[in-house]
Amino acid sequence: MRDPLAMVSGLNSPTLVARPTREVTREPLGAEVVLYACTACSFVGGHDGERALRAAMREAGAPRAVTTSGAVLAALAALEVRSVAVVHPYIEPVGARLAGFLREAGVDVVAARGLGLDALTVGAVDYAAVAELVAAGDHPDAEAVFVSCTALPTYDIVAPLEDQLGKPVVTANQAGLWAALHAIGFEPDGPGQRLMGVKPVRAV
Image (tube, rainbow, N blue to C red; front, side):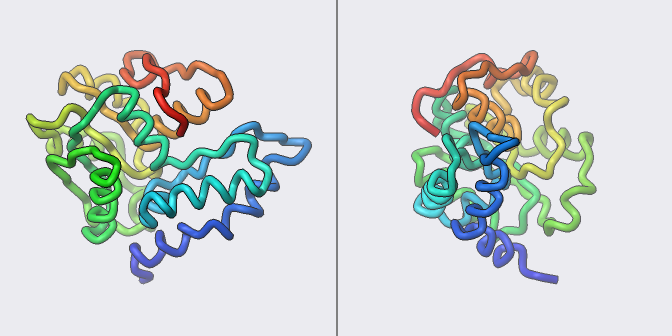
């Protein structure tokens, strides 16, 4: 089986986003914003790699370009979060890249918990397993919990987990959609989700 770190590193290539970007932005689709919806693939190359992905999407015709990992940083900034507990499904080397990406942005990672899964098995994780992972991965010093990976189901449990933990729970899909919708002037809707009540304080 292919090494997960090698796989996501290979997908962190600006050359791979040009064709799909052109396909969704030209008529009849005419997308006004393009979201690269893979967290690991957009953080594994660091901040330079994330910026290069957005630049490539814009060069290929995207009026606005967002990556999941860039959206997460914007979400944490909007919530004024400076320290997080991170939960994710990755193997350790990928999880370490995530922690480094967050710390480089000035976010203190006070705890991290992973499942050690490869891309082929992440899809089998259900809501109950994610909720258990988040609850177990929280830390008293964390101002929020960040749930990484767009393959994990999270939407329906964000609000209940925030009530349970008493702090924001930011997930990859939630942050990506929040940022993409704000980029084109729409207010996202997520009842009970703290992120949906704030606006970006900087460009994604």
